[in-house]
Length: 101
Image (cartoon, rainbow, N blue to C red; front, side, top):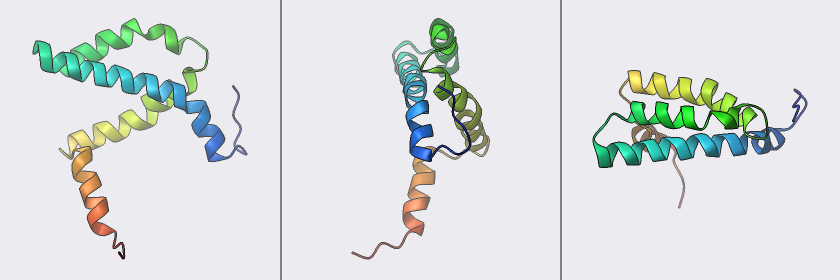
Protein backbone atom coordinates (compact mmCIF):
# COMPACT_ATOMS: atom_id res chain seq x y z
CA UNK A 1 0.00 0.00 0.00
CA UNK A 2 1.57 3.29 -1.09
CA UNK A 3 0.72 6.27 1.11
CA UNK A 4 1.34 9.85 0.08
CA UNK A 5 1.59 13.04 2.09
CA UNK A 6 -1.91 13.99 1.06
CA UNK A 7 -3.46 10.93 2.73
CA UNK A 8 -5.50 11.68 5.81
CA UNK A 9 -4.40 10.37 9.18
CA UNK A 10 -7.20 7.75 9.31
CA UNK A 11 -5.91 6.30 6.04
CA UNK A 12 -2.36 6.19 7.40
CA UNK A 13 -3.62 4.67 10.66
CA UNK A 14 -5.45 1.93 8.76
CA UNK A 15 -2.26 1.20 6.85
CA UNK A 16 -0.21 0.98 10.06
CA UNK A 17 -2.77 -0.93 12.14
CA UNK A 18 -1.85 -4.57 11.27
CA UNK A 19 1.87 -4.03 11.86
CA UNK A 20 1.37 -2.10 15.09
CA UNK A 21 -0.90 -4.87 16.37
CA UNK A 22 1.71 -7.49 15.42
CA UNK A 23 4.38 -5.55 17.32
CA UNK A 24 2.04 -5.21 20.31
CA UNK A 25 1.43 -8.96 20.32
CA UNK A 26 5.18 -9.65 20.26
CA UNK A 27 5.77 -7.18 23.11
CA UNK A 28 2.94 -8.63 25.19
CA UNK A 29 4.11 -12.19 24.58
CA UNK A 30 7.69 -11.26 25.50
CA UNK A 31 6.50 -9.68 28.74
CA UNK A 32 4.38 -12.71 29.59
CA UNK A 33 7.22 -15.14 28.90
CA UNK A 34 9.66 -13.02 30.90
CA UNK A 35 7.38 -13.00 33.93
CA UNK A 36 6.87 -16.76 33.81
CA UNK A 37 10.39 -17.93 32.92
CA UNK A 38 12.54 -15.30 34.59
CA UNK A 39 14.60 -14.31 31.54
CA UNK A 40 14.95 -10.68 30.36
CA UNK A 41 12.08 -9.23 28.35
CA UNK A 42 14.48 -8.03 25.66
CA UNK A 43 15.74 -11.57 25.09
CA UNK A 44 12.24 -12.89 24.48
CA UNK A 45 11.36 -9.86 22.35
CA UNK A 46 14.44 -10.47 20.22
CA UNK A 47 13.68 -14.16 19.79
CA UNK A 48 10.00 -13.56 19.01
CA UNK A 49 10.92 -10.74 16.64
CA UNK A 50 13.27 -13.04 14.75
CA UNK A 51 10.54 -15.67 14.54
CA UNK A 52 8.03 -13.11 13.24
CA UNK A 53 10.46 -11.65 10.67
CA UNK A 54 8.33 -13.02 7.84
CA UNK A 55 5.71 -10.35 8.61
CA UNK A 56 8.17 -7.57 7.81
CA UNK A 57 9.10 -9.01 4.41
CA UNK A 58 6.37 -7.25 2.48
CA UNK A 59 2.64 -7.39 2.87
CA UNK A 60 0.13 -5.58 4.99
CA UNK A 61 2.17 -5.52 8.22
CA UNK A 62 5.24 -3.79 6.78
CA UNK A 63 4.17 -0.11 7.18
CA UNK A 64 3.09 -0.63 10.79
CA UNK A 65 6.24 -2.55 11.71
CA UNK A 66 8.40 0.17 10.18
CA UNK A 67 6.40 2.84 12.04
CA UNK A 68 6.77 0.93 15.31
CA UNK A 69 10.48 0.38 14.73
CA UNK A 70 11.06 4.08 14.11
CA UNK A 71 8.60 6.20 16.05
CA UNK A 72 7.22 4.00 18.83
CA UNK A 73 10.60 2.50 19.69
CA UNK A 74 12.28 5.91 19.83
CA UNK A 75 9.64 7.24 22.22
CA UNK A 76 9.93 4.11 24.36
CA UNK A 77 13.72 4.33 24.54
CA UNK A 78 13.55 8.02 25.41
CA UNK A 79 11.01 7.45 28.17
CA UNK A 80 12.93 4.41 29.43
CA UNK A 81 16.11 6.45 29.55
CA UNK A 82 14.31 9.02 31.65
CA UNK A 83 12.80 6.21 33.77
CA UNK A 84 9.30 7.38 32.92
CA UNK A 85 6.66 4.70 32.46
CA UNK A 86 3.60 4.96 30.27
CA UNK A 87 1.42 4.96 33.40
CA UNK A 88 3.29 7.96 34.81
CA UNK A 89 2.99 9.85 31.50
CA UNK A 90 -0.73 9.07 31.28
CA UNK A 91 -1.29 10.13 34.89
CA UNK A 92 0.50 13.42 34.21
CA UNK A 93 -1.55 14.00 31.07
CA UNK A 94 -4.81 13.32 32.91
CA UNK A 95 -3.76 15.52 35.84
CA UNK A 96 -2.95 18.41 33.50
CA UNK A 97 -6.38 18.28 31.84
CA UNK A 98 -9.09 20.14 33.63
CA UNK A 99 -12.24 18.34 32.62
CA UNK A 100 -15.39 20.03 33.83
CA UNK A 101 -17.79 17.46 35.18
